[in-house]
Length: 274
Image (cartoon, rainbow, N blue to C red; front, side, top):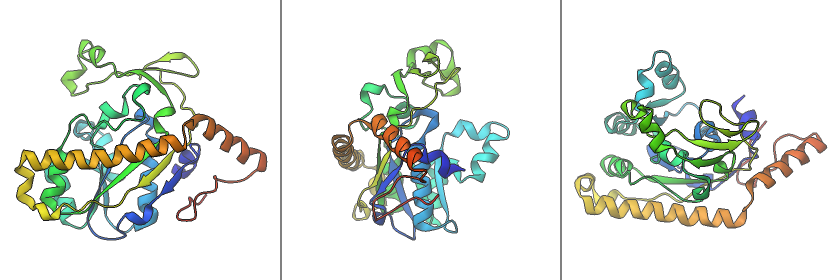
């Protein structure tokens, strides 16, 4: 079911060999597509295909969601854990993979004009986590996911006016998309079938810094600039290669429909199975 959903976005996954097949690893990605988050699902499926379903793997989720009756239980069932350093550090210590999107809602709701920008909002907790745990850090960059909807504004001021900040919700995005045109989270638009490209980059090894470096602001800032720099470089490259994700996605869907085929052909290094 999930693969059918992600196949709507003609996913292409590259560099999966850069993800360790076993052992603890922190995977850090850029977040796009609001609550539709097709990039996160594509990455999650790729992780399962690479490491198997038997090895422990978790995704860090918004703390507040775990306190909602029923929601927290469901999130834990699908492998999400609260985005608190202690929980993630314990998981890494047990040899698990942990997937983190540091930009969270602020990055996922960034304006469409900033769709090709890595924006972690200055959040460096994942750097301190990696240094404390002494594990490899694998950046994963997705391109095209923020073209599935056109975000006009994050709506940060509107969120404050509505009092959402009391719930630690900082955004109330305003979007443009079918079928209503102007839309918000109360009447969300239908996602456009933009083609998504995901690339796992070579692992970063920060173990030489030692766990005590997690308390050194200079080291943390340097590692933050390092990872966001390599991710931005990769995102720029992918954008130059595929500047029109919606047109590319539509053409692939039409081609598959006309040929009665399955999911789009992927590079030899990785392919989704229907």
